[in-house]
Image (cartoon, rainbow, N blue to C red; front, side):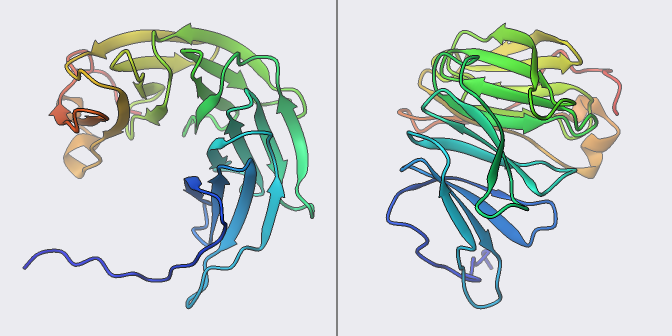
Length: 242
């Protein structure tokens, strides 16, 4: 028998488009990024979805939002207005902890937090740069390193088992595997077999891969050609796991 997906709960939370969604670490609420520049926080109820808070966070579309994994009261956001911000959900309405409008020259598409170093964040932008941020000074985070990946950085995914290794979807320039550690970022490997916009990318997570980097497997997909590829990186063989 095939897998059957069943709606647990559904709801219309806005008249604007929902562009991104992220669970908080406790899995009891969602953050939703909206096309009108707003962010919404939606607690998970047994029988309904109900917006607990919604505010105008940006001038243009909010492409991404991300709960801090160690401090779930903090919510990061990136927008087409070129800004990268952080919001304290303990305040009502949510208070801006910081808003960086000067570093990115185009829209901010994605945010990822280093799973082993909570004070390190990555941002990806249409301006083709992956940026490494030191978040120890929350009021004024420091852009430690910028790496040009040759295409808009639409998605970033940390390897589930290997420290500081990140998979990037780079729109017009395929996919890249990047080593992004404290204060440094270098390209380890690229994958260019897609002939259309590189949008979707993720690592396989399995018990076999946990202790054997030879089994690292990646799935990537591209837009106009509707193509899905599954492949293994060459440069992670014998790379130590975290």
